[in-house]
Amino acid sequence: MKSSRILSSLCYLSILVVPLLFPIIVWLLSHRNSEVHYHASRAITLHLIPILLGVFTFLVIGFMGISKFTADTANMVLVILAIIMAVTSILLFIYNIYYGIKLLVS
Image 1 (cartoon, rainbow, N blue to C red):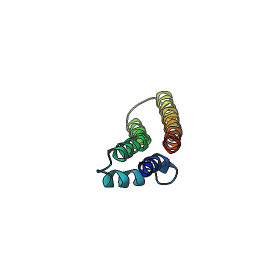
Image 2: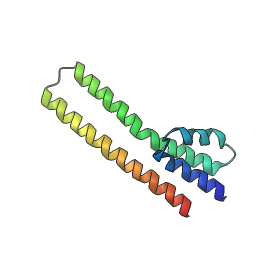
Image 3: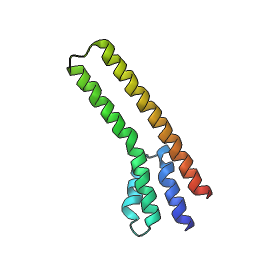
Image 4: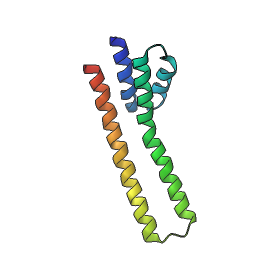
């Protein structure tokens, strides 16, 4: 039981070193242990959210570049998206570290 908590914790704490690779490997290899499998899939989701938000932001930037928006509208949208992306990434980074430590301590 102790090793499963350590492995689950490392899935969240891997955001410091290899954000997506380690949880995917653990998720693929942990079908027998449902607790580790659950935490690995949750860590993958939490690591993917900022990446998908970044891809969405770049798609919006590209769309706004080829469309006929005014400069003021485009700048406002880009600033709002950048703030949302930065705040979400920072909060998820902190949450991953918090939850990884919480699993280690409990």
